[in-house]
Image (cartoon, rainbow, N blue to C red; front, side, top):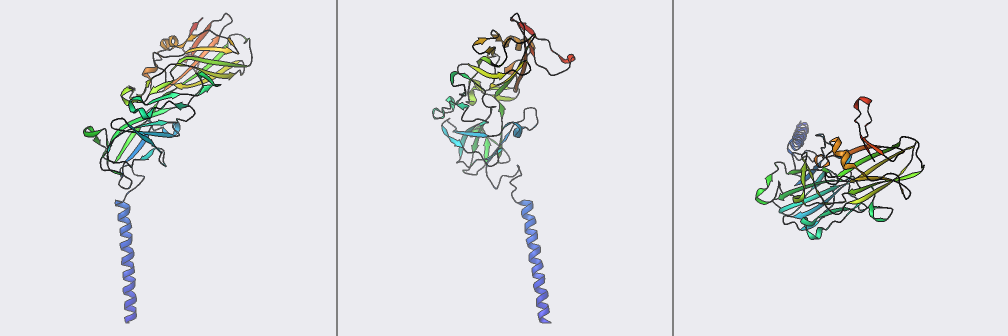
Length: 336
């Protein structure tokens, strides 16, 4: 009887312990840290997250595939490049207490972006395109589809501490221990289709050329502007030529330029070449852009498509390239 009583007592204690353990697990599940919950940063400290919403819908993963983070102190002195986190959109910030500025570039490769002068400080922090067309020093070819973001913030209590947006006394509490850096599109797509009114004189490979293409930016936040709510860096440096080799297919040419952003004051001039012979004269696209109401400095995503029709007398008809029905067609202009 005594043995059975002890056995029952042991079972009761075991059940009690199991119940308490279950209750403890439940409490931890309810009150503990969730690394996936953006409202709870207690387990990891300060976090910077990244977002790209070109049309009010999250699209980061569709367009941005790598990030590089450049850290500066409140005075603009360069502190170093921070390796990206395991999750591209989520960057832990284990920093000493102080105020910082972080500039982030998306899709920036070593091959196509250079010209950083971080040792000179944030005021002189620059980006320049260096991808050369067939090793020609002053002529560029397609570069990266670049994005950028910048955030000023203050860490209050050392590594893993709380984080505020802004510098010093002007800093505002995030409320969650996390801040968001919104990325901005800083490249331009120009698609060009060339057709002939009659039969082309030459068959083979052509070269499409743009002149007056911006080739650099200042990445200092004080030099940027806002376009449709997006932050855009200021163009800097000498504009360059940009070339593409394009094969003829079905008596048509198609090329897509990927460059830095145009501005209202720097819209390229187009010319078509076959070998060393100019097939067209200079076609100033700024005239066409104005006629069509295309103002690059007002547009946060720059993606343009143009159609060139070449005539036997040397004239060129330039139109928006629209894949649509005849009711949607927009008439173009003719340029000699």
